[in-house]
Image (cartoon, rainbow, N blue to C red; front, side, top):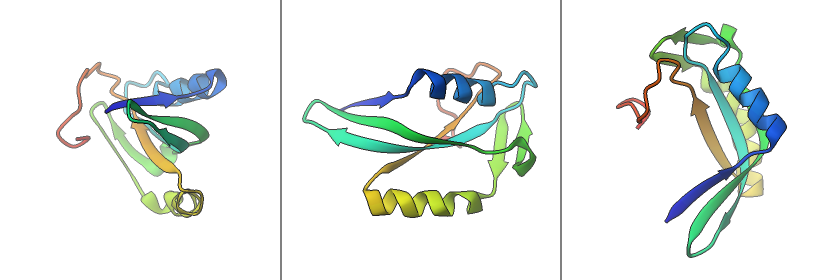
Length: 103
């Protein structure tokens, strides 16, 4: 099944700016998404973007780690509304595939 993520232009700008701040270290954000499934594709539509502050992360060129405590309210909202949570992180070094950890 084909997977799609739909994101608005301002959300994309905010996400890209957060994930690639120019310091050559990974960063992370989480999105709360509505979803629609058909027999051809499963589409996620970003409703809310939560950028994880750099100060709450351990960040290197090829690793990012953070406390998931910030996600609890988001997960509760997702469950109540039957929405999806998407974790998004950067690979500033240009890794074009999923890492073993990300997989």
